[in-house]
Length: 159
Length: 159
Image (cartoon, rainbow over all chains, first blue to last red; front, side, top):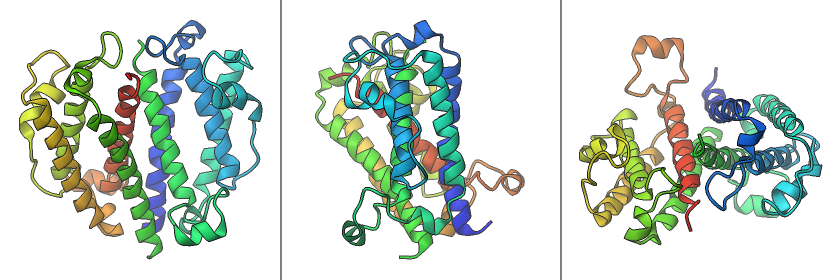
């Protein structure tokens, strides 16, 4: 493997580790446990699961990797805080969306070349990208990996 | 900048964003706020700060970047759970250690070439590294960036 390919495979490997741990945590939680808040007055784990699913789904168009799969959950889990709207889908449906989104995203990023990782994401203009070439797919992907870890730390607080 | 340099600078950039946010959070917390638990029965923020400082300090030898700076805090913040031992240093001393460790680490990783990022870390044998070349500096660093994000999510739970 080339130096470039080893670097990008390290980045994707880190994402896969974070997703694998979240999958394990989420997989063993019952519906009642998903309805619990991570701390008093804070988000339910179910909200966090919806939030992460929607944010990862948004990465498909943001990274130029395809159309969104489940835009219908944004209102409940991104635009509004927990509790403002009813959960739009069942727990099982949401778990299936989570698995589907991550599988599609992971398969797509595994095919990117080093040069493609460094191309601009779709929400930055050519002009702004010329000024700041760090506004690329890689920075979005690393940022979302950290975002998932951030919420994983909250998931972990409840037994 | 070369493709390789852009990739590694993206990785360091992601670390700097996570550290910058943590610095901001930690900087505005009073001693009383640092003594609060992130959730009932969970770690104090001060413990998390000590834990992250010690884990980052350990990266210096782990990545072959230098000697440890503050091994004296491991007992309280890595080896033992929160509350088992008294805090070994004052809040101000711990904050200064946190800043110092991250500054040294960031300065050192910024100098690594792409090839150096892919070299084995110091806790893996030549034989094991030959079998699994992903056991390199990059994977440790990405893992620790995610680890910091994980605890940042817990820090964020308390106002």
